[in-house]
Image 1 (tube, rainbow, N blue to C red):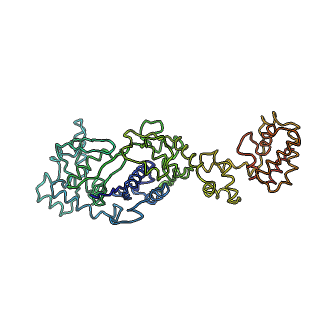
Image 2: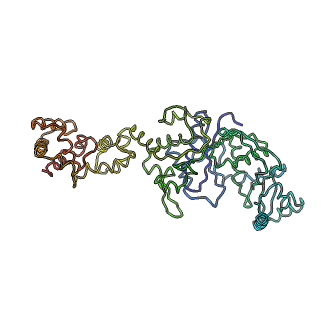
Image 3: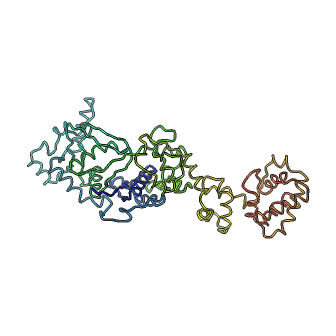
Length: 497
């Protein structure tokens, strides 16, 4: 096996990529980058009945959005093409036949009806049917039929599958990089189908063969694949191949911590469970995405990294490069990780504040079609530290473009008086001469008016804000006035007088 670390992300194109899949891809990517290895992207589409158009492109777009670059595989090519399992169909049969030839697998001719009948017989006896070392002796396969009959059935085109011949009494033991030693008795594993009647491999055969042929050194995948791991170990042993290291990642749990996170939980909780928005091609229903909800990719990466891993330090904010340096498989937890969406929002808030005004303005410029990019930057500067998502800036900036129609009654009843009205009147009269009109010059003009009137600035500021915005509180008032523009400010001041 290759001495260079080679990992793979191998999703199935059956719909939108779950955010847990993005975390799996991220951990593979971090491990590959930290060790100077390679990351492959392989599409596992052996189950053609579940194939969904557009899903593969969605996977590529999602990985690109969070900043995961692929070294080899779908989208970039490489020495082990093709990287789509449906296009590798021709090669799997030879491997399955090799196992038959070495007595590690066998042909099974049982029809679905015959298997159903056997299943019902077992249920009547109060037990579950398993195609295994005991029952296979009573079924229609190449272990129980004469060789001539087996050859005749194959020659006649009779449908058959190839099943793995699981040893009767064997302890399957392997060390998982996260879970330590895993022990399973072979009696708990049934004789899995490796090659289906239509010639397509099952997931188990294709997965093991491809990982071997592509030189994969570490299989880092979700905990849901842990029950399949002993079977895969058996397959490696049956082929006589060195197997990769396994690392099974903890489950993503519901926000309250009990049970696996599902789309339904996300819908009930009002948060996304997919990286990007997904429109189901069959039903037309749209599922929300982290990107469209306003999450920044760097915030999503940081959030996902901490779902099951911890650097062991107090540091919470990591760039991708810092994650690559700090990451290690031995710091991944065994226990499930609670999907705390409040933490995801916190990360987004922090990263939004770190972003330059210019960068955020680029994201939002389409939402301000009548404003210059410089004006959008000013709006971003005004509101960026007060929001969690970029689109909230659009919502919260409406007061800059729409004069108030209602005014905070509590402030106007308690703080509006003849003295304040006099200051506002004088201020409105002084502003036409203020050039250029900026937050600074507007403030200087207000100071001058209050000094002349002998009124403290504190008595004027809140009623002035209400006059201009309708609200008792908000972002920097002088900067807000600069964005509104001198004519609009004067218009709003004179409107209440």
